[in-house]
Image (cartoon, rainbow over all chains, first blue to last red; front, side, top):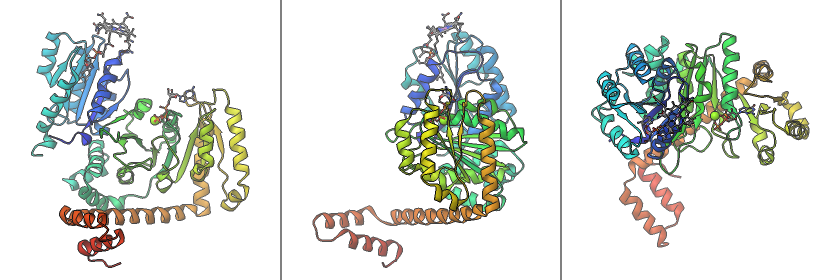
Length: 143
Length: 319
Ligand code: B12
Ligand SMILES: Nc1nc2c(ncn2[C@@H]2O[C@H](COP(=O)(O)OP(=O)(O)OP(=O)(O)O)[C@@H](O)[C@H]2O)c(=O)[nH]1
Ligand SMILES: [Mg+2]
């Protein structure tokens, strides 16, 4: 397992979405599980999120979105990441949560989100998923 | 791999720069290699420390100061430090929230950093991360410390100008300033001057500074007090001007060279004592140590003699 206290996670809220409870719950839970969590607040543009991923050199990008605009904003983030030379789930693990209907979730998972976690997702499930998938990132292979 | 990252960093690649900061944070061996290789490119950046109690508005002020520096065309680096939980090893780094409008500005690089067990208000890797940003090409590097207490004053060993932020109506805060924090400040800021009590805080601080009149005369610099409202723009220009005045004072009086010497000395001492401690713990087998500890507990040996044995056996040093 990759040592959690050296794993950096960005929790980001794209778009004009003020629902920040879930993002804060997840950010605190991951901190309490021993991760280094960066929270950038509400109303972030995809560009700001991707720049933060770069400057903070995070290992995990967690996107929280409850506004309904996920099919526009998340693909845009994925595209910008690729443009900057960051392959989702090769260079950075991308997960998402919030109000995302199952069909959309499936679609997003095809596009490159490693997993979508909806309302009521147990925290442990999210943490286990991160622990299990981090070693698949390029930088952690063989560790 | 490191040579490649450095080459890319020197060309202004933010991804490579960010990766180098991660390496100096995570890996002591790599930190050594990186600093050795980039040191010749450093020394250009001016370093400004922002310290003060939790929630006093340090990050919000920083957001406005970044803007001032950018207006003058300066390349800006920011290292914002928040505490690591001693219980879980995790950290929630939230300073960036207040500065996010700058994150897409090509002339700004913002990095959040957790203390990872350091107690002085900075992280162990802060100085090395500063060197990376310096080599990357920052003209100015702001360092936001964790909320300062009485012992968290490492920032004086790092920054050229230290800005101490306080807010109205913090009685205990003034006590803390009296108890030693006054020594570290080059500039005082009373932020949230929109709140009641700003004038009283100004009065009290001013009185305290007056008591040390001779010291300021000797030094040639009396820390100015600037009232600000970071959420608007009130006082921000004055603060930026005060920072520039302090820089000019340091440069014209030659104080800057003294600071650089002091800093270099502190840095070497820290590296030496850290390296010695690490070498000893690498070489000292747990079994030998526990034998010695048993002897101490049974009063067959005193702690000083035990330490002498440890030093002789691990490093071959006699004291
Ligand atoms: C509380 C709430 C509000 C509060 C928000 C307070 C706040 N600061 O967060 C207030 C009253 C302000 C509000 C306002 C609005 N709301 Co509202 N709100 C809700 C409500 C009832 C609960 C959301 C919540 O906080 N849940 C608790 C948290 C802990 O759960 P969560 O966010 O889902 O997070 C969990 C998972 O999703 C996941 N997760 C979330 N993020 C992430 C991120 C990662 C990385 C991972 C791994 C997991 C993860 O893990 C969490 C824990 O299990 C929902 C309905 C619902 N049942 O979800 C509607 C809801 C989200 N709101 C809705 C709407 C429409 C609005 C308004 C537009 C209403 C209006 N017309 O004014 C405004 C918009 C406000 C704005 N600026 O964006 C709709 C959204 C519809 C849509 N997406 O299609 C919902 C779904 C209600 C509905 N059924 O219509 N709202
Ligand atoms: N009224 C008022 N509020 C302010 C002012 N400056 C900052 N704040 C608010 O104070 C709160 C804390 O501001 P931050 O900038 O995060 O403070 P900080 O010192 O960086 O906090 P930590 O990093 O957590 O120690 C925020 O809600 C700001 O909006 C000000 O001048 N006046
Ligand atoms: Mg802050």
